[in-house]
Image (cartoon, rainbow, N blue to C red):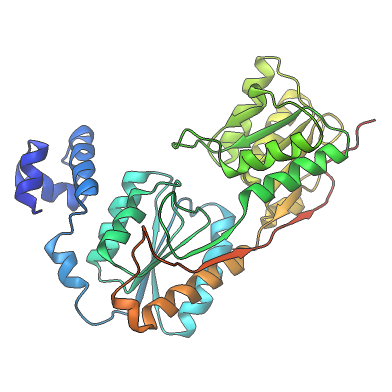
Length: 341
């Protein structure tokens, strides 16, 4: 498929397709989406990108993360940089802001810039960017979010284990009404984070309540808005587990606004163990994820792929035998959980 055929399918001019590929602001959003959807479905690779895959190495690695402002990813990037700098590689960093179309555009950009490989923390479990990386044959590694039906090289922690440990800790301390705050899931199925939470409830013979399974943006605003919303709806809970520590910070902020004391009125368990967690008032009980090792191992795995003889002929992402590295997590007890009698 070429630009002319894509333009015909989308009902636009070839110049409009080119503007979309170059991320021009002159294209309307609905037109941009239509063109990108066709490109994604066809696996189209612009000639300039295809040529870039055949030239000599550039000693540059692309890294795509969903939120560069989250300290979790900052620590992961430290691990990546440690490996790549030692090997003389440069990093081209892209921040997708949890926007799948932006993530896909960055994948095109990195390929066009002739990067030797890509490390990606996708926005979702069905990333269009990752699907296209499989089609293009660019060496890449996924970390943090496994992909549905794609056998990618992967460095990950078990998010169901994170939520299981968090919920179990609250249950052991007498909490039976526990709020779970996860991120929105476009797959319309329960995420691993929710599945771990449900597993803990089952072990204590507690039926889940739909109103206590909430979705929010993975940031301070997300946590704050959920607590305010449930307070207005008079939903009762004494414990909270969050998909990340920044959401827990939002819970703290909302609790203060509502006159609730942590942990006297509300016990909170976060997830990540970012540096800020220990300096909150009270210090946050959380699940420690191996942030630096996630980045370090991802970079090592990518370089091994690039340096191997098969690096120019990557595995089939739908059938291959990828390398999957699972790292452990553990509960860090501080002062944000109180035992209920």
